[in-house]
Length: 291
Image (cartoon, rainbow, N blue to C red; front, side, top):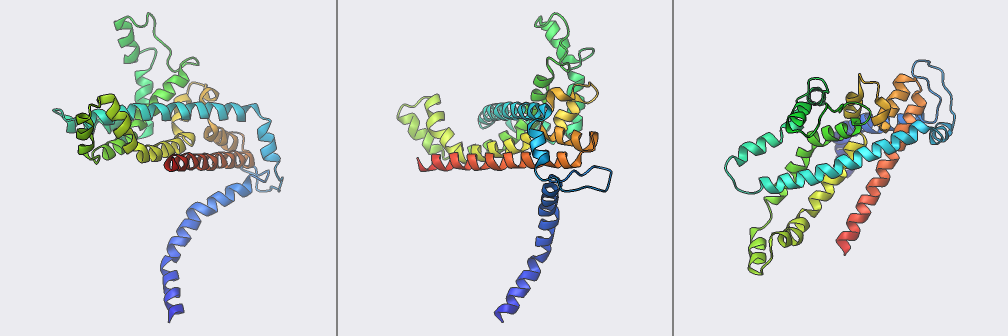
């Protein structure tokens, strides 16, 4: 009887197992296997080459420049998203007229498709007809139009776009937690003479700690694996290598140079980096919990 129930239970979860295996484990496993081969994107014949794809990557200038560029872009955008998102969440948690409307507009960048966001910002930052340069020149900040999409400012422009589009995610997460903090904590602190900064440091931040951990973890994953924003920002300008991160480098290796094996190796390296980052994140978090 028990074995029959166990079989029925297994049959019920079998579709889920098949879906998880087909959509997650099989692509990951196939990518790992490809990384040990010299697979060409078009040619069918390929062979096992061991770790040669990985050793070759370690000696490639393009790999290391993509690694550091992607790291700089991810760390910068995540830090600015958290700072800006925290400030906006604190502001939107206050009571003032029109708060509901402003909360709705704050989510606007996150709802836009990435391609629309890129086209919008490319128009706004254009050195020829962009409104950003017009405003800067009108205010006397700049004497001549700044080439925001040129070699000197392309990274800064890409960081700006990444922060603008994704900081609402931080706002939503932190605002939801702020609204559940017990107000009696603040009232007791005020009675004890704590000022605004002391209440923020000793009440608000500790209460946001768990949410901040999840937000930083997720945003770090998203920004390290972000492909569309760096790719689309450089498309058409011939400056791809200036903001090329590892996902873009893997794409160019696979579909630009037809080296599917090396492209898979880059993806596996990126996957390993994220696993290590996860371990570090949870290690730091648990150490903080114990203290």
